[in-house]
Structures are given as C-alpha cells and as structure tokens.
Amino acid sequence: MLRPYRDVLARPGALAFSLAGLLARLPISTVGIGVVLAVSARYGSYALAGRVAAVVVLTQALCGPPLSRLVDRHGQARVMGPAVVSTVLGLGVLAGTATAAGPVWLLYVGAVVVGATAGSVGALVRARWSHLLTTPAEVHTAYSWESTLDEVVFMVGPVLATVLATNVVPAGGLLLAAGAAGVGGWLLLAQRDTEPPSSAGADHVGGPSVVSGSLLVLVGSFVGMGAIFGATDVAVVAFTQELGRKPLAGVVLGVMALGSGLAGFAYGARSWTGPQWRRYGVGMVALGVGVGLFGTVGTIPALGGVMLAVGMAIAPTLIAGNGLVAELVPRGRLTEGLTWVGTALAVGVSAGSWAAGTLVDRSGSSGGFAVVMVAGGTAAVTTLLALPTLRRATAGAPTTLAVPDDRAGRPTAAAGLSRRSRRRRRPDRT
Image (cartoon, rainbow, N blue to C red):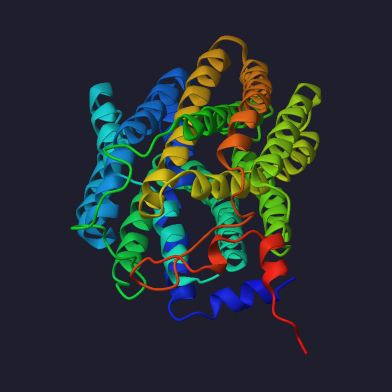
C-alpha cells in the first residue's frame, strides 16, 4: 500500500512542496470555525458568525477563479506572493476586531480581504504534481496523497483552533490561520524549481473562461457537498455547547476528518479501472445517506461514530471529483478548473454555515443538523442528475489523469491512453 506513495514523494522537490502546501492550507479548516468561535463568544450570535464566515467564502468564490486564471498565465509566485500578504493582513483585521468586539462592518471588511486573496492552495499544489509526474497512475496517487493531507488539515486545524479559542483568546483560531498562511505560503512559493511554467505568451485555450456545461454540473454537486461541511461545523459547535462540552467541538470535527483521511489513503493506494464519474456518483450518494444518521444522535460518542462513518465517504469522493476536472478542462487551465470546484465547495460551505447558524439561533443544534441532512439529500440528488452529462463529457477519457512529459507541456502518448489501451500496446516480454 505504501509503495505508490513512496515512489511519487521520492521525486526531487515533491515532499518539500507538499509539506509546505500542507501548512499553507491549514486556514481552510481554521478560518470558518475560527470565525464562529470568535464572533459567537464576543458578540453572542451564531447568525452573525455564520454571516461573516459566509462573506469570506462568497468573496473567495467570486475572486478565486480569476485569481487562478492569473496564476496560470503569470506563474504562482508572481501572483500569489502579494495575495498571501493581503490574506494575512485580512485575518489580522478579523482577529483584532473580534477581540475588541469592534464594529461589525469591520468584521466584514476583514472577511472580504481574506476571501478575495486566499486563492486555492490545493489547486497550486496539485498543479505542481501534474507538472512533475509522468504517468496517470502516479498523478492519481499524488492527488490521493494531497486529499489525505487535506483531511489531516481538517483533523488538526479545528482541534487547534478550538483549544486556542477556548483556552487562550477567542480569536486564537484566526491568529493560527494567519500564521499558517504567511509561513506556509512563503515556503511553498519560494520553491521555484517545481513551479509549473506560466502560459504567458502561449495560446490561452478555451477563451476567457474554462467553464463548460459539463464542468458546471460538477460545480453544482460540489456546492451541495460544501453545504454539508459548512452546516456540520456550526451544528457540532452548538451541539457540544448545549452539552457543556464546547472544547470537544474540534475533536468531533477531527474524527470526521480522520475517517476521510484513512479512506482517502486506502483509495489512493489502489489503481482503479472504472470511470471517475461512476466513483464520484457512488461517493456522493454514500455521503448523502450517511449524514441522514445525524438525526439519530443524542450524545457526543454517538455523534463521533456518525462523523467517522460519514468521513469515510468524503476523501474518495473529492479525489474522484478532482480527477473529473482534469478530464473536463484544457491542459493549460488545470489550476483554474480545480479552483472552480474548490470555489463551488466554498460557496456550499458558506450557504450551509449561514443556514445552520440561523436555525441554531432559533431552535438549537437540531436545526443545524436538519440543514446538514437537507444538504446531503440535495447533493446526492444533484449528483445523480449530473451523471449522464459527466459520462458523455468524459467518454473515452483515461481513468486517471493525463499529464505532460516535459516542461513544454507536451502530453505523452501513454498519458492519453486508457488502461485497456495500454495493455493492448504493451510489447511482448519475450
């Protein structure tokens, strides 16, 4: 199981940029819960906390794809260097305003700055992998590795943010996000040898936008999945607070990430021959069914058990979804394409956190979990409706990602072949 991971991480510079990316994307698991913990503690309103978190994500949804388009054109360091500085400043405004219980409008200013400049670190790292590796199987393993690290972020981040917010300062989660964004971003962008070449001066395939009808339906299902995550964050914080165990909120959220990380690691160690769209559909339906169990929990151990089971469906679904993006977008637009689905996920998180925060204020954690279950059902149905379109759009595509064979971006012949085709062309071993 470990050999595929050892092989890809042994590539020059691979482990270094992957670990830098791990630190740089810690904010994706700490900003949301950091806002909820800081704002609810100082302003006494989950609804306000949900709105501020929603502004972060909605702004990122608007600005993320154009920012990634600039990255594809001009390079990661040139575009994201100033963006990282702005993100850190915006998080500082959020943390300082919340700590001082300052004017609400200033919370929104900080949220807008963070959302507009955060970008998608996951897309940056995956683009480096696609540039570095030479076979579809290797890229599948690398993407699975990154999805596992995503879950490590979601295991560790909420726990650290909760501990800091409940034991040190309410804005501790936001301060943690600022430090990770600054240090991790600098470490990642400083590694120029593994940075993909920019497309400046080349034909920018696909016009001003990479969005197609098939990508749009994938984006729609990612919105539903994101709503599950956003509503779950708020509902879990409210549930643990009702039981007088609010510091355990981060631990419970980490349990879901643990299940996801384990499943993603096992998924990436296996070579899959079935189409990505089918695996994505199975994962989304499993996720929708799993969150329906939230209506049965009444204790923290029971909630932890359901979170673990739900988590097992997350990483494999995300890996298959990211794989679908590589089959749907032009080669030179991968960062932008991955950012679109990441943005869709973020929009869902925003909507889910806002809706759950509103219902928690009215009817407690049960209202928040109701939002989670509705989001799960909606995501499953949306995905089932999208599968025929995805199947047609990816007909004949390889079951894993096609990647370039050199820095000029020319695809190898093997990279464009399905597993079945490669078996037919394998030379006689005699």
